[in-house]
Length: 98
Image (tube, rainbow, N blue to C red; front, side, top):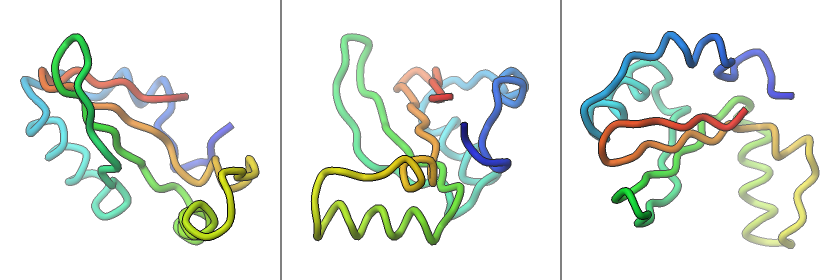
């Protein structure tokens, strides 16, 4: 579904366990640099969760962001797959959308 730069399930199995959000965020930022962007955060039953986008195709991602701001809520799948969602919880647990 996602492109070659996405985190696969096999890649996910190799990601270390983290003690907290800061440790996990630092690991992802070191690995993916500016392509790892925080989008928002929210409270859940287990504490705070931080939502990130791993940008896979910068041109399409920027186009999607522009369309969301200027045009409508509808985005085609070709733009939706320009990023992969990563959630990091306060306790360092991660969830990667595949």
